[in-house]
Figure 1 (cartoon, rainbow, N blue to C red):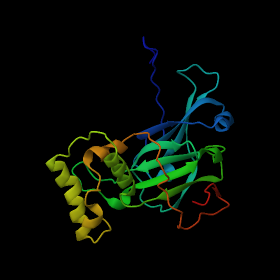
Figure 2: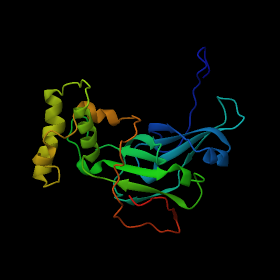
Figure 3: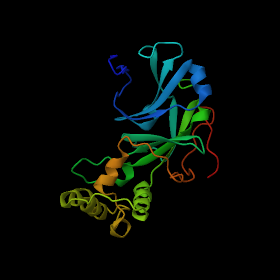
Amino acid sequence: MAGEDELFQMELNLHPNEASGLLTIGNEELLGEHGWDLGFWACLDEGEIEDCVAAIGHRRGSPDEEGWEIERLRAEASGAAGKTEDAEAITRDESMGYVYILGSHFGGKDGPLQPKRGFVARFREADVGHVTEVPAMELDVSRRSFALHCLINDALKESDLDLLPLGEQSHKALIAATIKRGEKENKKVGRPRARGRLPDQHRRRGLQGERYPPPRSPLPHNRGRAPDPGRVRRHRPPL
């Protein structure tokens, strides 16, 4: 509601209704197609990523506190699709025009982490055209165990930033337990890969709703099954 600080509250309903990240829509043609003067991308939690990207727009000419709409992006996942239920952040690579959605490793607060649950998905904003119309927008999904964490941790290590120390219990629950689980189940995350590079708790929590452009694309060339070209908008250049 509007108050002395001119802020207002709006309520938008789109299942599953838990938004983890928000990013302005930068493509003017897309805004114009919907009759919006302002728009946002939102990633939703608790659902597969192809069902959890939404566009929020404000109808041009409406008062600030009125005329808000929300639509689900018609999308289809390709590449390393699968369990992608925990989208946590959304950002944009301005140089390439891609919107990136980052998924967590789905570990509880008491650990351990699940390496294969983390993912990165992307789509090119300029190729959307219309949020709800066919063909579906292709969401290119990549999942490489802790690759994004390693990139971030390596960059932090090379920086002069002061980092919070990791507590003993956090290390036991999130680092040691993840290594132990990987060795027990013969997962790719083993002690040589993990030593010194698994995500610390304070770094892992940085993915929650953060907005930062990746220094380089974390998505490898898609080796997965290609989607039906008649149903999906093609947008991915060779990497």
